[in-house]
Each structure stands twice: as structure tokens, then as C-alpha cells.
Length: 85
Image 1 (cartoon, rainbow, N blue to C red):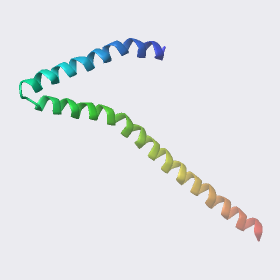
Image 2 (cartoon, helix red, strand yellow; image 1 turned 135 degrees about the horizontal axis):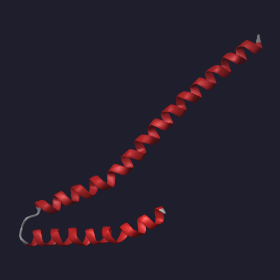
Image 3 (cartoon, rainbow, N blue to C red; image 1 turned 120 degrees about the vertical axis):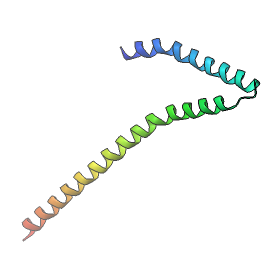
Image 4 (cartoon, rainbow, N blue to C red; image 1 turned 180 degrees about the vertical axis):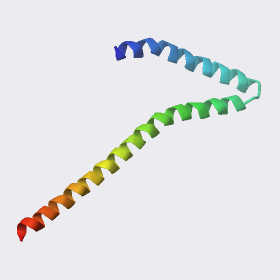
């Protein structure tokens, strides 16, 4: 099902790239480079957002698992101290 959605959306995304390139090309030929800068910033923003979200999730997962490991080691050390006496 997911593959079907990706394949259907692929044509629209390729058309969008050509439209953006045509817009930037026509604006640059007229001497207006501001729109091209804005589009480049928008592309970078859209590119960076998923990586930041995944990185944030990974960071919180790693921090939580590190705390859980510290708790288990602490409990294990306490049990070893009790049984070694």
C-alpha cells in the first residue's frame, strides 16, 4: 500500500522540481535573485526537518535507555553486595 502511494506521488514531485527551476530561471534572467534564495532556503528546510526529527527521537531513546541501564546496573550491584555478605 505504501509503495503505491509513493509511486503515485512521484510524478507530482518531479513536476514540482521542474516548475521551481523554471521560476528561478525566469527570475534570475530578469535580475531578481531573491526568489531563488527563498526557494533554496525552503528546499533546505524541507530537507533538514526529517533528519532533525529522527535525530531527536534517537537522542531521547538513547538517553532513556542509558538511564534504564544505569538503574539495572545499580540494582545488580546492590544485589551483589547483599549476596556477597
